[in-house]
Length: 188
Ligand code: GAR
Image (cartoon, rainbow, N blue to C red; front, top):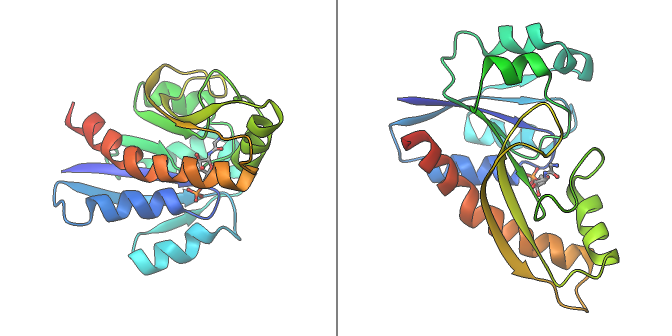
């Protein structure tokens, strides 16, 4: 049995995709979802999916002991940032070497770093007149969006695409590739 912890701040479409993917797999258990956002859509999704959800404030998240204590006891094999917007404290990175992965909605190293999340990324891609964008799945290290790349997938950006159109294309790539990549990592 492999145990996943998911960290999420937003609507939770990635949490939903991951839960759907592993729903019929008795070898993979989503032990818990942790959110920093008391208004996040992911909370309702966790209720519907019957996944334990823990809320931690921004202060709670910045304290590595709080996080480590929260995760302790779940025998977590992989921590997945599924639309998570806060910096991961260094102590957590050290406690879970190469066991924390993030999905970023662009082709890193482009359009990464602090403040680059969600629609901010897609607007920046549009403003830069990029002809392609995509997703990057990478290990988490001490720096925002700079850990070793695991997987990337691309999609074309057409000149008439709005940032919302770009978001839709990127979400399709996330749904197609993120759960499968997590499965590959768990089986490695
Ligand atoms: C996703 O597109 C994810 O790639 C992005 O936030 C969105 C969350 O959507 N993550 C980042 O921007 C991290 N820097 P969701 O809440 O519906 O899964």
